[in-house]
Length: 317
Image (spheres, helix red, strand yellow):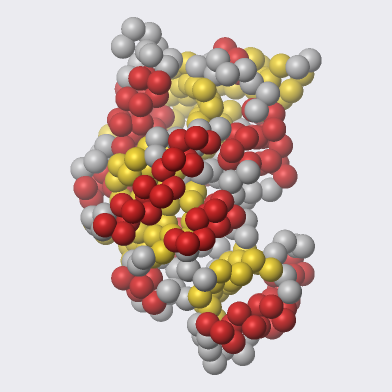
């Protein structure tokens, strides 16, 4: 390595995160270990002034030992983001107008600064909509606010899942059994909250065997975990108690990864997490994919090292 990179992490405040399991923390501390300069700013610190993209930013100092994870913010200062080699856009959803505004502003940076992932493509690739580009790999799906269409879908598939289109972490997901009488109440609740359509999918019984998270780096699968839902729960997200287990990629998993790989590379979506239940892909997460801590713990694969190897090579460091 001939030079140290200046890296800025756009992310949520570290004090709000579970640092032990946080993917962004793992990526940042590996960058620091390599003597790169790591910096921190929040979405609300982003600015656009006189055709320049700036942020109220500070240097970040991290440490970890055993089960102790610590961070220190240094003094903040307003600085053009063009002074940085890499911007890591690791802001968690919700995918709302604040998030969309951040992608628009970052998009105005010159190509001399690498943004991971490409903000234009992130904006145009919300995980529950982007995945529909590969509908042949998905479970049967309806995106709609039309109550009659939703009821007809339920009549056809009996056992269904209802999801908010822009939710994350398993929040707001309902498993509606054929005999469940709560469908109307659930739809009323969703429709009173916003004007967005819902995603309705056939329920995949394979979820009881786990929901596999696969991390792709530059279109290549580099690690995976299987998340097992806890008893009495149809959601397998770790945020709601899903248990991570070691897993291997099946031939079907590899086929799905190959099918989407070219699109990811073309769009500059270099760091991506996909979710697979049984033979079906359910989401493509391009905003702030997680899971590398669990993959390292279970499979001894250091994706954070592979990530910075890729970035350094791309920037010819």
